[in-house]
Length: 499
Image (cartoon, rainbow, N blue to C red; front, side, top):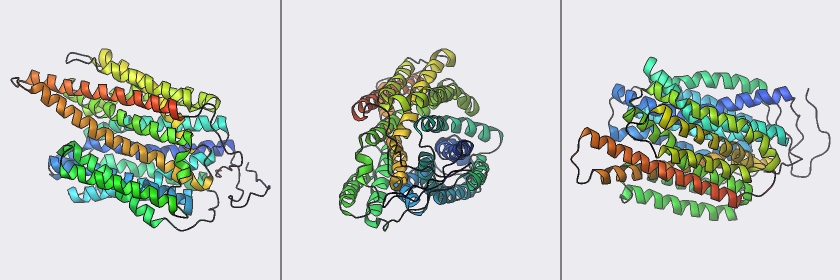
């Protein structure tokens, strides 16, 4: 049963809102977690479907990357705007707009009759995902304000975030192999329909506080900066680091982001108030998740290559191979991550989790051509999953803890933005290192199938070593930046209503 707080709010604070019942809050979590799953799994589910879609629609290898890049460009560049719009116009409203738009864009992609239509659909998915993801995380933040419940909620949400990529690989393999690649997009219609119904009946937003105008100059600078970075890093993977189409966009992106920071220091209503980023716990969250995100691509991308190219796994078998890692992510995220975070805070947990994940990556550097899944891959996957669960739940909790409700949307957007940028940097760097390692191995050797397989293995080892380094760096950064002690939660923060 909902109760109302009659105590007047301080000047400039939000109006009182109904406190949801326990049952209502947990139903709200189910809805928000479904939306998060849809956004996260879409980053990998389409990768599995791409070869089949390419054969069906008849586009080249060079054009294929744009199906992935189109989504990443729109999603990464519009997240900050999406987060601010949810603060301005209401999180539930933006959540529903994002859900419905994402579903319609997925339907367009599933019905694509050519490459252009598919790329447009993927870009629209990214744009609506940029509205959906920050709204979901900020609704979670304002719904669960009591530390113990908040820890449990973010543990579950963090587990979904960490496991979504692997779920995408499995679901993509099953749908591609047994139904059609188009259902890798159509499946979002089912998820979205359930989430929309749940949102309508189980979520109510806070009243929208008075706000100023949208920071148009800051928005333009942020979009140009993030597009430049993501695009340039994507070209680095295919064209190399010295190509003009790599260095040019990256330079434009960096300069635009510097201009963005200068604008934010001066405008009255900034797109990203720097107070959000400069808090030590939030800054620690953003830095940790960006670096860990770069390392994660060593798992999902290159371990997938090993399973398919060296062990000869089918798409479905590859997806199933990641399930133990997903189980271990959910185990630590929903137990240690949620039980311990309210008591000790993220400082001891995130570095420990990153170091455990680094140990798992280190185990994978021992893989050989005659390695088996059970003896060579499985132990590393389980160790990595146990570590990632301790990284995702506390960082997402810390990224939105203690933030003023007027900034909840943009604080939530930042965690998605840095993960996207970290993933783009990781993809570009690791792909470049892998290609160089394979090329160096082949120099002066007669190319035979065995030598080619060994060169591929050498490239995977290189990536796994670098991913190990990324996780160690994430551990160091987290240990330095996070404050000691439990997270601060605003005692005046009223949760969004759910009934």
